[in-house]
Amino acid sequence: MRERKYLTKLVSLVSIFIFFLIWTLITHFKLVSPVFIPSPISVWKAFVDVVQNGYKGNSLFSHVFDSLYRLFTAFLLALITAIPLGLLSGSVKWIRAILDPFIEFYRPLPPLAYYTLLVLWLGIEDVSKIALLYLAAFAPLYIAAMSSVQKIPQDRVRVAYSLGANKWNLFSKVIFPSTLPDLFTGIRTAIGFTYTTLVAAEMVAATTGLGWMVLDASKFLKSDYVIMGIFIMAILAMLLDAVVRSLEKKLVPWKGKE
Image (cartoon, rainbow, N blue to C red; front, side, top):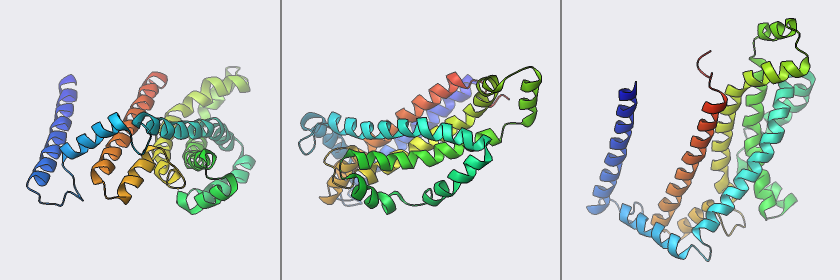
């Protein structure tokens, strides 16, 4: 198993190396205009420039911090509201009947479709951006929590009651642990969807943030800065996902072994 794991990592590293090699060759022989595909060196120089001098009056740390502040604030709010409501909806039919129409109404809508309304209602500051990210995170978390409760085998519940469990014991020892695998899947999905919505959230009246930096650079055809910003966003997203997966392994060690 270890050898297969190391082999898989080696294949991944080789594929990354081949990608950068092809990219370097394309730009070196100028097969494509640098306006569309800048060289890896140009992208690296753009990164060094932003680290040293910032972008449009703000440091790279400031852009990263502002984006992550909006993301984490919205996600934590969604986490503490969507999961309890989802668990309740999965257990109580009338609560599900009340909430489902509203969730299903807005869930398929593109974020920009209702972002203008949020700006009108909440202003152009961070509140409207956080609200947009909150809505983006809420639906997948709610659905994951609701469906996870519905998937719990009734035999498991009956056994708990037969052993003398009260409602709190049933929830804390049976229902909630049983929902954790699906909840973590929903958390990973919600983080990804919220992260992609971040660019849309920073399109309107923002002056900081990674999404804003990428969009601003694209207006001036600074493709090296655009790709640099995309790489930073991708690396941060991968780190966030790695943290969630690490927590999942610690808190749900039985996943896949049932």
